[in-house]
Amino acid sequence: MRRRTHGDAGQAFPIYIMVVAGLLFLAFAYLAVGQAAANRNGAQTAADAAALAAAQETRNQMAGDWLEVVDDPTKWQDILDGDNAVFDACWRAYELADQNDATVEGCGESELFGYTVSVETNKSVGESIVPGTEDFKSTASATAVIEPLCGFDLPDEDTDGGDGNETLPLPQLTCDEGKGNWEPDPDDPATLPKPEDLFDVHLAD
Image (cartoon, rainbow, N blue to C red; front, side, top):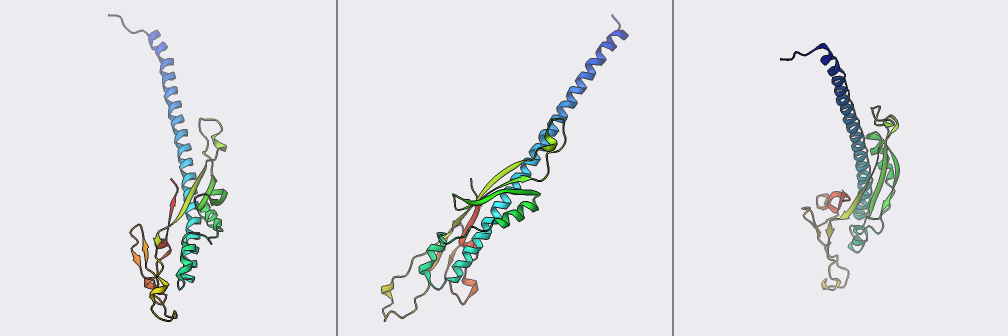
């Protein structure tokens, strides 16, 4: 039986070093990929939060506009359709992006009736075995949409049966998404839907 010589061991040692070095390189490469993925996820989280915050602020404004004309149901539909909506809530996007350690690169009204926000992370991916990651910052964008949840039928003006001066009851709001039906009474706050009952805010698919 042939015995292993010192020469054989000496030849195997460089191969062992190469294998270990290769494994270390792969480990550091996977770490760099993980760092980049985490940075990217942080950017997307910031963009989602910023877009939702801006859309929710505008939704609250629209709900407030509806409360101001709750006595006049002929004006309800325009508000529910967003005809008078003002998209001036990008300041909320800036706040939420900052809270998520990112900076807003762009914010404005989207084609889907809402806000589109793009952000960049404040922190880079960090140093890694991959060149350039120490200066690389992730970007992401998101669009949040505002959708009405409620509908109603205006009462027939000919059904009052009087001289036209009688006050008709306000129409019932029929709302989707399990928000129920509402019979608004301006004198009873419990009968007035909240912003989230009137409008849904969600990220675009």
